[in-house]
Image (tube, rainbow over all chains, first blue to last red):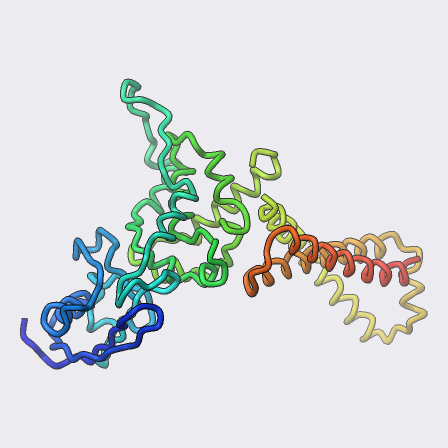
Length: 240
Length: 109
């Protein structure tokens, strides 16, 4: 790849009380933000900490704040987000910074469990395979949210998470909604109970930052709206 | 669970208030543009079941809506949550209900 010019890159260093450090990185065609971070770590400062795995938008581990917005860095081209060749790369918001660009994801995944984001089977391997009608309303609702890669971009983008650290967040609630629409799942009442309430779906303000920033173009806000309606109905019928 | 009921109360009260706000604005515009005196207004409202019910419901919905809304705002801006907050905003809603109820009684009874 031919080098065209140099990028001015500010990278967060240290933990929460850290600071930005500036690097100069050669700019090349089709260069991603993850390429830039990798270049710095391999050639300029080997002490830089960051996380990545698949490099192709599947694993959800490389999300960072790029020029103020949470993004998956492996699929974010520099030319699209930094036309002036200036990059500011910081760790994701709403999660404790461990060091540099790595955040502690414990809260994020703990909330996934608190939202009962785990499939609860109702059959054994001896039972016949359940027939799922692909164009049924429930299956389509589940399909709409199923491609989440747990990158936490939505969690970092959510103002309600900032205001209420107990809030389960868009990803966990989106996951719960897909399971609520899975006809094979056997834990629907308990899950609805887990996601209803002040720390759950009712806390959502419908800002739609999660939808705006989701790299997979999912709409967690719509999933949360579905949970709100389901909890509303369940409460009125005494099933919550 | 209390969060779900607070949510239901807030959304339901909003649905009730929406048409009543429009009615209230129409009443204000009508009263002002027609140059109605206080006596003329009271002549229409006193003993009226319709105005008593409409504004009574409006006051009730506003009290519930304000209390549940303030509950959310306080819980997001401060760390105050739980039972004590629920009691405090319930008291706030009750104050609004009493004040509004007195105003409705004054023009209807």
